[in-house]
Length: 363
Length: 125
Image (cartoon, rainbow over all chains, first blue to last red; front, side, top):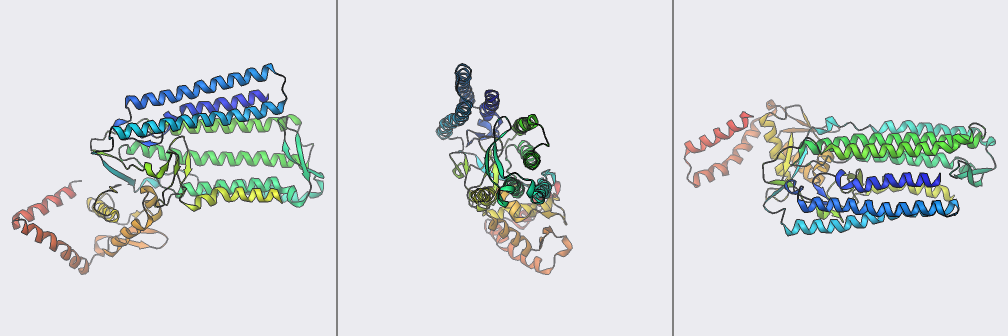
């Protein structure tokens, strides 16, 4: 069971890692701005292919050995979990080092061929694009928070029913395996943590809504479609995850108050269902956004290109632009969003709820 | 309407912005009563400082082209909102350009022709 879960997660991870060069924005290759007319360059295409091949090969070898090792040996569950987790980190680290290798190669190629020379660098904005934005409004995210407040209220109301030992961790079989003493704080710690996460989701949605529509001058329609798809789908994905987390956490909390409410199998199956839905949602999201700017490509005859803001992208991954009031921007390598690290509001939205959770659990 | 700026141009960005908005109104792409995006939204779209957009909006407001209404943003004014002072200001702004045209040897006829070519170009779209 453990093996199956780890393999399942790892394979999805590998699929996303290997597909990344084909899912990113058209004019960004390995985190480097490339003018539209050079994105089909033979060398660049071969970099993408080699990246995908290497990541796939390495992951296959590692996962196959992991599987054989688990099936052959009689190691305990704990070791399987530990090694499985390490392997996932390994896959990410390995992909990242390959990314950096090709990031450097792409930069060199761009410099050697003087791709930006003789092209006027421009930035564009569509004054009316916001009327087409289909992001969920922030207050929709209050709904799951209200459910959580209800669960907290119910817990306080039923405080006497709670056992003397409050479960804090559940094993893979759905049975609690770590406990803490019952106090008013520990009794509601789980829903409080959930509330902090939901507040973070609300903040992230609001921050994305306030962030810029980054359009490409050489692919106006394609980039507009991509931005709209990204904004709409990421807010729905976050809302879905927030809702699912609410259901799962409330379910665990209710089971702590009324141990006989649900059968053990339900306890075991719930997190797995959660995992499957979240992973499936993420894949659909990545593919949808990744494909959104690959059709309906407009022809550009002028000698223009998008403004080269590579200097604001440290390593092609971390965005740092003091002038840009955007809190979040679209990722360069991967599908989704990243912080504008020069904007302190982003840090508050993302890290404040984490700090609250850590402080609460230390009490 | 699409706004396109060249960050490396000699013309300051705030001026590029106001010029294009004015041109957009002249061409009829933006109508009187339409609203412009908020300063924050516009600046984050372009990845430029909010002061730049603010400066551009204030320039447009000074010229009477937009009205900045607190909370609802910047609204495009209608032509009847213009008065004698805008005419005086335009006269001052035409002056050096027309003087330069005369200095480089353009005749009155050529200048008038150039003006009508530009007007036709704007009206065409």
